[in-house]
Every structure is written in structure tokens, then in C-alpha cells.
Image (cartoon, rainbow, N blue to C red; front, side):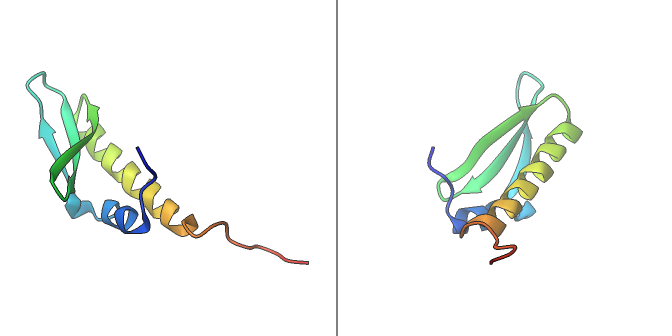
Length: 77
């Protein structure tokens, strides 16, 4: 899988683009809305675990957006 673009990262940070479905085996699957429908991301044993996974993913992609253009210069000499 290729690294997501800034547009994709921005899309992944919007909670309304996520959902949780229950599978036949009782697991809960987190999914992200894409151009061609919903795409599976993770599976968890509880709804709260699935919600935590979504929140963690959102935070991960927010951090990626901060550094997508490279590192932040802290100090130059």
C-alpha cells in the first residue's frame, strides 16, 4: 500500500467518514469511506475497542498531516 496523500490524510481525520459494522463472527470492524465504498481497516472484539481504534487512527493521521511536508525546523545556526 502506498503512503496516503495529504488529501487522503485529511479525509481520514474526519470522524464522519468512519463507521463500525458487526461481522457474523461477532467482531466489530472499523471502516473508512472511500471513493468506491467502505474499506475495512481493523477488527476488534468490542464496540468500545473499535471506537478507540477509530480515534487512534484519526490522531495518527492528524500527526501525519503536521509532518507531511517534512520535519518542523526547531532551530537553525
